[in-house]
Length: 231
Image 1 (cartoon, rainbow, N blue to C red):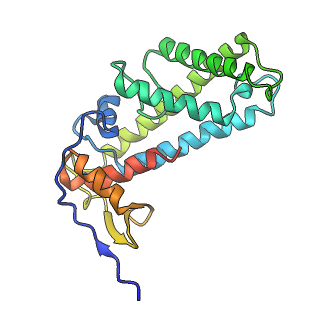
Image 2 (cartoon, rainbow, N blue to C red):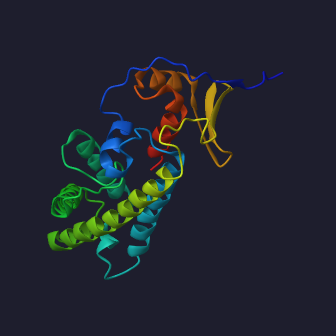
């Protein structure tokens, strides 16, 4: 018989570095200075906006005049990943830690244009690719992507602000109905019965040891971190 699920204790020692996603989140928006861990609702809302981003690019591929038609899914995922790494280690301010959104719009536009052109050059070396777009077309794609990402990131920022106004300043996992249990070797973290994530217990233990935030927000922190990797 399978043993019943075990509730996971949140009293795990904390020792994380400063380059965690949570540290980036705290720096990303002036609205959430008192809150270092992202609320689950914000993580899910961002995921919706990322899905919107990919959907718009997919739709653009069937158009002949949409600048984003030249951005395929592989390139988009790669560029977003590069931006996350760059933003998390840089000093430039941004609206969101996952959606490309430096507040310096010209800097963001130039970065995306360079990335698209760089990937285009790699495609030139691959004989499988035909009709590779011109540099001018790729510049237009970078500019359009910059506008779209900034718009989506602004939506996440405003949503984050609204959510943070609805919880106590010193909220805890219990306050927002975030619970966790061990089940079949995994840790399942549930937010108010609305959404849940499941990760191996070993992964959870590793994340817990590196965590330096408030212990009563540990489960929310892990929940948000997992959701950020679901691009």
